[in-house]
Amino acid sequence: MKQLRALTLIGPGFVVAATGLGAGDLVAAAVSGAKLGTQLLWAIAFGAVIKLALNEGLARWQLASGTSLLTGWLQHLPRWINYYFLAYLFIWAFLVGAALMAACGLAANALFPQLSINSWASLHSLLAIALVLFGRYSLFEQAMKALILLMFATVMAALLASDWSSIGSSSTTLGDISENFNLVMALIGGVGGSVTLLCYGYWMREKGWHNTDSLKIARIDLLVAYSITALFGMGIMILAAQSAPESESGTHILIAMADQLGLLLSPVFKELFLIGVWAAVFSSMLGVWQGVPYIFTDSTAQWRSKLSKMDSSDKGYRLALLYIAIPPIALLYLGKPVWLIILYSVTGALFMPFLALTLLYLNNRIIKPSLRYGLISNSAIVVALLVFSYIGAHYFLS
Image 1 (cartoon, rainbow, N blue to C red):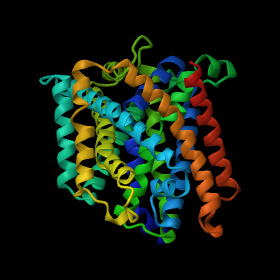
Image 2: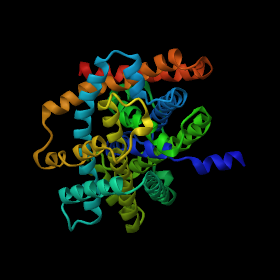
Image 3: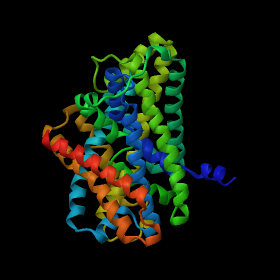
Image 4: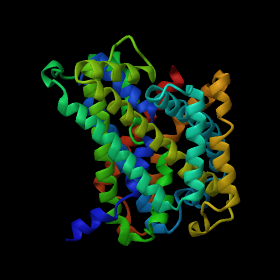
């Protein structure tokens, strides 16, 4: 009975996992499937495990200390770190806002071509603003769960109807990894998000998880959520192995997959797959629009010592929401400035190793000894640190 009750209480994990599953992750899975079949399924699973470990560390810190991770950085790390993070956050939010709008616009235009991609993109942004500003967290969480169920069900339906004998199986060699390094790193680094991991702490607060009594349910929450999103990513890769043309790239490969599934299976599966893609990218947009303003508010309002004082009625929260949701629309029409993308890539390459390193420090030195990391947790975070440090070094060298 206790396990059943726990399953009814989960929610923030679904929200953070779905928020981190953006269009780029779907494209990476589709391109991998089109090019290598199912050889890189392991990379999706590995990436989900790493992100789960990082999120568990964030939950451990907040529930043990009573403060957000950003407050932990301010109190226990040099002040300049907050300035670096704020600079990165402003760039990241601007580019991610534009990318999510474009992805939503493309998915909606494929379903309803009466409106242009940019028109759909703008409408999705405005809809997300309305849901965030006028809905409570409970409504937001239920909407996210519905979108996750929709995207998972549509992909699973297509998988069940597929001819698995045409997909085949193969193993990954070191040569495959070396030749397709960028794809492998995109799959490992993409599943489950990056900066959006920080939103989990604020959504735990909204759920009413305030102390270590909630740590067990948080772990169940994260395990179930990342399992579902990993299966969804794997499903995309498996479908791409039989339906995605290798010649396509970017988000257009998902549209090409839908067309091919319609030919191979039934026209209805074209629409179902596009609905699943739309649910995935809109859930990511909705999660970013709702969660990232908390990060802005927490980062800029350094005098806030209590997380409980932060909510969506805060002026800083609303200004951050408008910054994410309105100015990036210009990029849909003007294109992304090269210098901004380069700056985003350079600063972003440092974030995930930094997150892993700070979790190792805070959860081994600051919180009370009974809640500190053990061997398994330390090993998982060290692996995350090494993997993302390697990815970061690769970005700098290339």
